[in-house]
Length: 131
Ligand code: HEM
Image 1 (cartoon, rainbow, N blue to C red):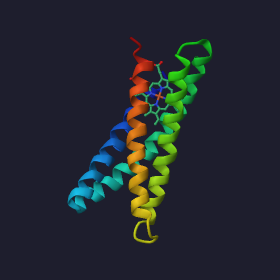
Image 2: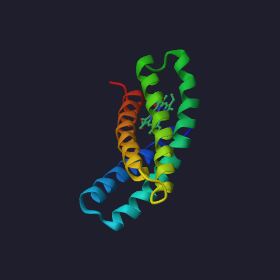
Image 3: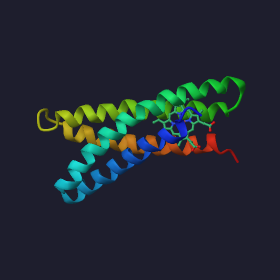
């Protein structure tokens, strides 16, 4: 199935873990969590790209009515949102310490990404394993 099933679990795991690391940084200012979180955000954003590409190719089957239209559309929008906002967070992360406000903007983007990737994964599960 074009590896969408296998690939899509990487951005979910990395981005949710990046969110958890950010909560730790927020609560305790831990330097280790900050470094781990930076790596996880980068890995998650990069891994979102093949997930979106394979998902788009897989969704060609949607024209045959293989998937409920509302669910596939929402899954697609949230998946693309995850990728775009993930890279935006990465951009702010690069500018942290150089541009004022970059750190808080990165945090807002990361928290949006955590919500969108969780919802994307949930909807993907309902597409892949219908009741
Ligand atoms: C960050 C982006 C994405 C993530 C994290 C993601 C995640 C998932 C997950 C977890 C599943 C269920 C896999 C399983 O059953 O084991 C799934 C299924 C699916 N996704 Fe995505 N997805 C993403 C982007 C997309 C995009 C952009 C599309 C395009 C419409 C798409 C189309 C599909 C389709 C068609 C299925 C059902 C596959 C089947 O027939 O079993 N996905 N996705």
